[in-house]
Length: 189
Image 1 (cartoon, rainbow, N blue to C red):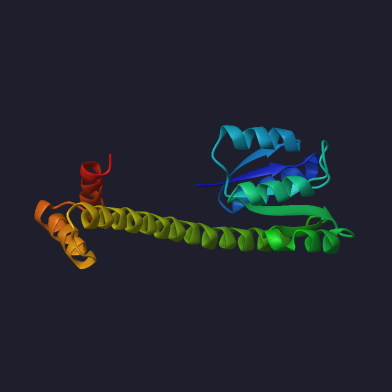
Image 2 (cartoon, rainbow, N blue to C red; image 1 turned 90 degrees about the vertical axis):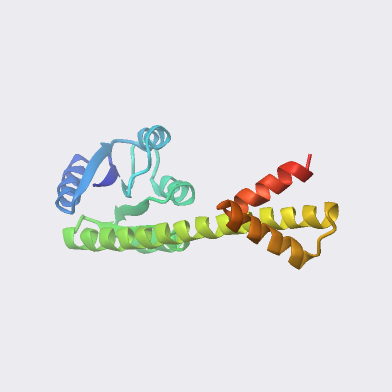
């Protein structure tokens, strides 16, 4: 189940947002101030969506939204007065924070939530792809170090070292990474 956090000092907005988010299939947790939300982020895994109703009792909310955009993968929606919406949207435009004006319009908020959820889903896919690419790069570096060790200590050429690692991986039914680690354990001390 998707999770959403709401931080608001306005009980009416909190209640309306809870009803809307629950109807969209979210498990909802509410907070009355930014510091309570920050503490929760340290204690738990981050939610899918964070809805911030500015101003809060302990700060405006813009700084909290910007902080969360840098430190988390949660989708962020910032609610603010209609006379501030354009200015606020301009300030946070590069961060992926959706800005929705108050008074709260359910269809506008629903659209913003869907947009933020879709953007988060795409970001999570890219993050997963990035992790896979970083893992492949790490493996290639490890294999190249093993090749260099074979070239230095056994006087293999680069193609010979490459073939040796490939053949060892096939013959021992190990990954090239495991073979490279074994080679490095033997020759790098």
